[in-house]
Length: 355
Image (tube, rainbow, N blue to C red):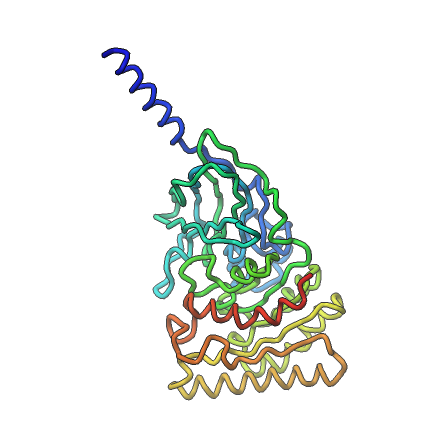
């Protein structure tokens, strides 16, 4: 009886050891999605030298981690995360998982497969993202929050497993796609980080994508153009029109473009029209405003093209998120359906420029 009891205790003890989670600092693993490493803290998007140069709202939104992702590999049967948010942001039209959650993907046959989402429970969260896996060594990518920042992240794995640097070089970090724009580009209102179209395109292209979306503030700030000009992209997407009025488009677009083009003479640059929001089907004021802004953008584009700028493309808005009015959460900002359709719409333009 004593021997049976001792064996039972031993088995229980071994199982308990096997189930323990050990946390590792995510800062020790590659961080994708940053256009500069010279940031004030690790998990943010804008270099520190812009703090007193760009408008305060842009600087503040740069603290959001939209488009950032951590790469690692592990043979753990479970993956956990512990992270602290910068603000614990709340919005009434976007899921908390999209605002401040984490999304885990695994690499299989060179394709990124969704594993699960880490749901936030407060300013600090500790949770198991995935469990019950076999002990196969896998490549993982963990997407960070879209509309909040993080001050620290730890990745948890079984105590008897390993966590290591990625062995695969996917997604490629050579010549990323750089995207500039508005709240939609930042990821509003995806239900989880992996469903923002920039993150979808990263997985489909298997290439790093830089997200420079600033909610309500894609207003052609020249400091952002200068930042893009210092990068080494395979393509640049300019998706600012939803935040610009006609005058701003007429006055600032060409100079914003010239800053980029003078530094990157051979990089394709895409100008993207304002989406034809579902809201605009019935709201004639919005409908006419969108038409006027898109006309203004086309005029700038046609002037550049006729002046010899042939490495540019205008991406029209027709059919961008479908024709059934079902792609948004509020008539403007995209749902996961809208983002998937938008990614499908943009993919053909980008894929031809990827090595």
